[in-house]
Length: 339
Image (tube, rainbow, N blue to C red; front, side, top):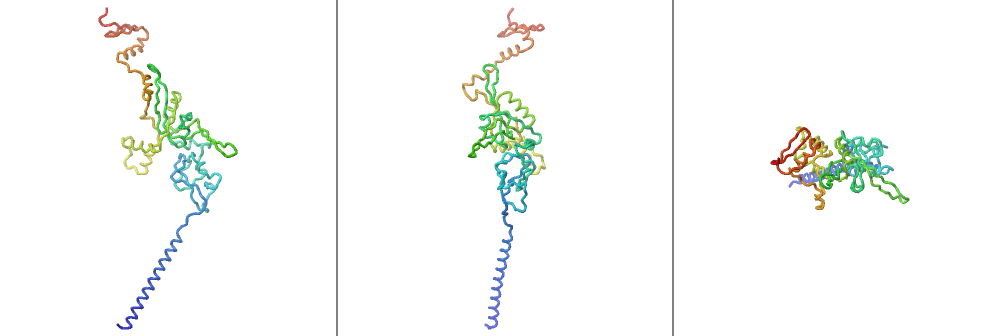
């Protein structure tokens, strides 16, 4: 082979190798510069932000708020910070959102209103809803484990007088009622910093005007008890309503509007499809309190004695076939075949 050709070939290989090394170093340096130019995680103070969208009237619970680093240059005095005296998120549980807050947005002190502040109930109530207060005891309020934002059923227990002994009846009169507030108090006691939780004796509920009237009447009829509902009950109730056709979504509704419509339906209080239980259903010894079924003949006699004509004259009780003769206000029953 010609010597010049060999030199040219070796030179071309060296140039290709140098070019490959330079290209590799160039791309590696660009990647490093790009990685160094990535935005750094804020290292500022821990600011309280919303984990989800909080519309007006939302009662704050432990799953809705959280702390995250916030740029110090963007911090405002109205934000809740973790190192501030009022930065404890636990103290905000049970407060109500006064202005809408989007997910990831810091909470300001003006966005929440507490039970001790003016306008608390007005901010917590939904459109067209009313607030009604019900007296409860430790036994009738799930031992105090009912908190603002929970949903409960209301059970009415009473004695119904009728034929025979009084009938003991328990009935679920209202379902899916939201708890707005309780008069529970947490007081400091002693020098050791221990706290004492006093159970509440009144519960304020959110209801429609008709259900509020129903609850007011129920307080004078018998004893009211609260039955705490599971969070999953709203989903099952909504599935039942959709399957039965009770909820109808208009055609052309967007997915967001449909979700909002179904959520509003699942969160409304209901006083239909109620259930009841008598003493005879609970204990066999209480079955004697259930009124006996009246025979047709005795029903006629009861209706006859309750009529105005029968109340003004003495009507003898006749068994067997008979003829009823009325002369003005006078009623005479003549047995068939008698003279």
